[in-house]
Image (cartoon, rainbow, N blue to C red; front, side, top):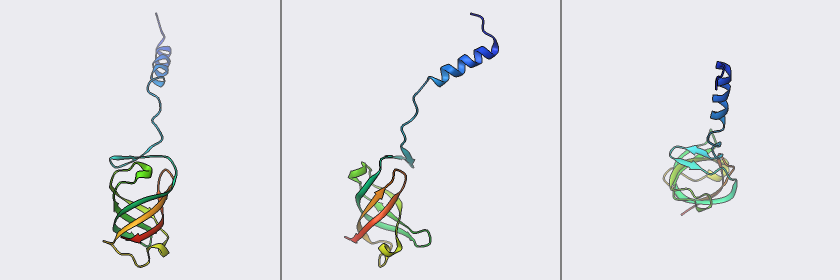
Length: 112
């Protein structure tokens, strides 16, 4: 079969486009792939490692989160400042959060 250079290029691009299917819409975070599903009221237990009142964020070193099939990790959540009043770095806490598929928003927090 005799192909012109442009036909050969078009054929090569077509074959390449028919290769692997697109990746699932999961969100990579470090070594962990975070599920893209939306979950309300997921629960965690951990230690506060940072509080950023300017950005409205709190960071936890937390254990596994069953609702999202997450392993233990350290991550930040957006947080209304009124929820963080009286908490400090090093506090051991139980917390709940909503996950929108990309980030978490703290809903409740209590000392352990």
